[in-house]
Image 1 (cartoon, rainbow, N blue to C red):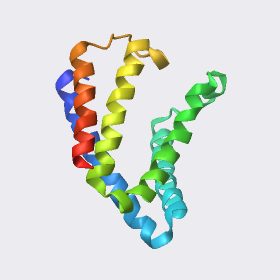
Image 2 (tube, helix red, strand yellow):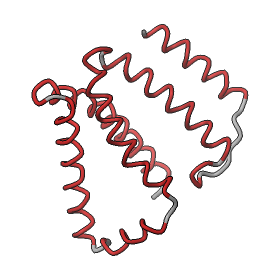
Image 3 (cartoon, rainbow, N blue to C red):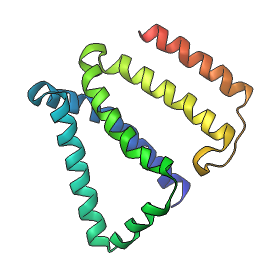
Length: 144
């Protein structure tokens, strides 16, 4: 995949990340937050299972049993993010919720890069990135 296509898909992911929490929160008002999380994660599971079955890559799943348990935590984090966002969007609203989530994601991303965690290429945090993080915190305060 070339860089332009990667940027396009990053934008698509941003749009999806912006849409998913309020959609799930709306569902949570109807079926409660735990059931909304179950529905969301179940739909995700069915879709990815179908894709994996039709692409013929199901055998590779067995490799997951031989990897570090740290990589299994992604599923726990995903369910937690959906459940928590279902609970907090109705309280904080989308703008405040996103300002916190995105700001903290960027800071965590910088830390992951700094130390090369989870197989990510080590990239030192720069002074301009630190300044950006300070501005993120100021932005969160202003939005709140």
